[in-house]
Amino acid sequence: MSSLGRWGLHAALLALLCCSESGEAAFEVHIWPERLVVENGGSRTVNCSTSCANPDTGGLETTLEKTLLEDQPRWKSFWISNVSWDSVLFCYFTCAGEQQSKSLNVSMYQFPKQIILQLQPVWVTLGKPFTIECRVSAVKPLESLTLTLLRGKETLHSQTFNGGATDPQEARVTFNSTASKEDGLLNFSCQAELDLRSRGGDILRNISENKVLQVYEPPPENQMVIIVTVVSVLLFLFVMSVLLCFVFGQHWRQRRMGTYGVRAAWRRLPQVFRVQHM
Image 1 (cartoon, helix red, strand yellow):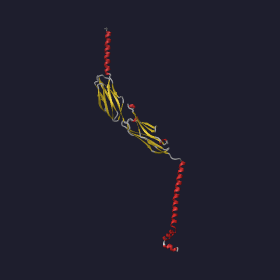
Image 2: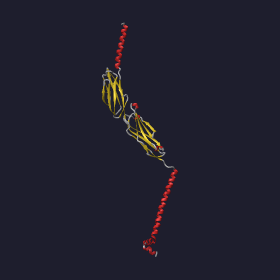
Image 3: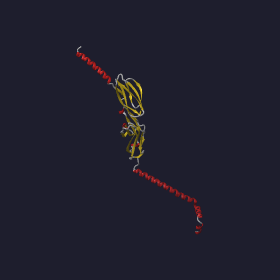
Image 4: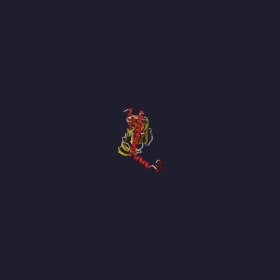
């Protein structure tokens, strides 16, 4: 074999050795799921794996409570429990003296358990203003919450909130309106929507109990005049009937007593007064 051939063979063996060593060192670490959102106090499973054929060590670093469920050289499964705050998980493996890791953001959410809808006032005159107020209990993340005020299936007002607080927050939305005839025919409600899709979750929805607005429609002016007139006439007739009853009663009493009544009255007069007239 010529010197050129021997040099080419050595070069090929050296390249193969270098590529093999670099392939072993350039391993990967994977974590599943890639995004994780957990309800306050909830639990989930997290898996760590590696492409290294014979890893030296591996595990999961977290400030949350964890339990090892499965322990394989290239794959490990953990149970993360009592998630009550946002956290970051780190899956790590060591291969040929080199360590690689992969992080996972864990988002805690709290969906409002109470949705309270109030109409103020609950009895309103047609054409007069009233207020719709919707309030929800502690919710997180607040920036993922949308409150929608509904009249029947019609959206009256919708509001998405700004957040950033680490603790659950209360939310409130109000809407001012003017009473119409339709307001007294349809139910009012409030829908809460928590959109967790950007954090690896779903859209959660809940709706309040229905509320009814009592709309009072005042009668027209001419109808009011008629009502007042009728009431006045009835009142006059009532008074006249009482007076007539009194007059006829007195007349009947006098007829019944006759002269005996006059004599009895004369006897009741003082003696002196009677003498003066004799």
